[in-house]
Image 1: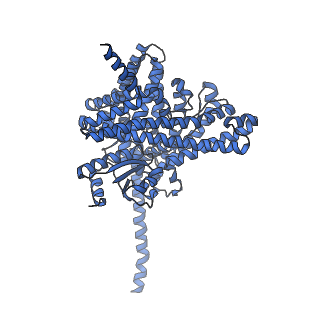
Image 2: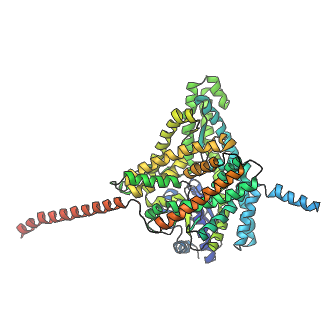
Image 3: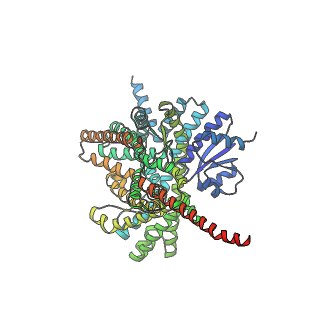
Length: 91
Length: 510
């Protein structure tokens, strides 16, 4: 499974989001590749990913993609990421 | 024992001196320390190394597009034109200083952890790309100052300075950051901090009676500028077109055509257009490289930091504050860009001819990120007016400071790019100036003094100002509260009036 974490440049906050998502996935015992991306390539990367994690502003910009777009309000809230990822993951 | 010398020499020269391998090894060691499985260690290390090589490939593309632009600007204005882009100058400088900066980065991270552990400055700087940029800047400036033979000294002093700047800047920005985010859990770790503090102060000075930017309804049409690929391409096309047309007017036609080796005007214009897009391509490649390195390196670093300094505040990248005042980001960006243009004019007509400073052309990406951040800081203390003036001040800073920094960057100063954000400017220049005597011993003393002073001042600031909960712009907050009260009272009065007006009507009906 592929998950994409998105921010403006793809080197700042998205890397942190990627790390926190990986942490959550490890505790959930889910095997997935998480990659950081900037908004410029996000639409392209979302083509072959299952889940996109991003902030509310970028979610509207990414628009309609085959991947499931999940809005994370606080990139540092592991609980929020856990609940939202859990709901999105296939059982 | 001769074989041992040969082996050590081989390791030193062929492996530890090659930045890509070195970064890969450092990442792998970090992942081993975090007890990741062997596959993750090999994959992470290899990816970080590949990321570094991608950086080099992107640098080649960028140089290819910057060289004709540099020539063109030199021909028409007689001055050196420079576009400050951190990613670009980092990629260029890493060819020569990559290995040194990798050592500075690793050791500097250790210094930061020690400072966070043992001083009141409990910040862990996690903005990976800025760590890398600052390590490179310090490696370049110190190598130029100490000369090529004192590499070990460059690494030691560079690491000390890097560790210090990574804990003091989040502390200095923290009163404003707290005001923006409304709590004390995260700090800003970004080397545009001087611009943010200046914006916060300017906002407080000018916007005492100004409402928040967030009450304005903005058109969403400028949002596409958050896309760095689009923003870079647009700004480069603009810059290229301005100078290409200028070249057509000011130069003998053949001389202008020769810059791109074109045969006629149409080919000349389209060559300029194509080169501008090539710059965007180069930056995109570099960003991909940076992302590949950071995706592996930052988690390794953060995992270690969490174990060594539990409970320290993470100091994060500037877009973190953007959601708190989205309109202020836009206002700050536009005002910053304006500040950059006006400062460019100032450089062209006065500072350039008199002090020999280069022309700093406004790059859309630094103006967006640091200008946007300055807008948010300005808004927090001075509302709309604060966001605009704060952004403008930032724009002036990130144009003038890089121009001064170029003077201390040595031969790299001719690469047509430089570091953009404010802290690179003042810190790099300060370090460069303290090495000017050319005597390494004096340079060491002065730089260590700078480091100690920064830590002491920041510690005092942390204890006296941050910890006591000083809020910048408290006067305006009081004014805002009274305004809100007034509005509330008016509303209540209106309601009462409406009731009075309605009451007789009810009566007659009855």
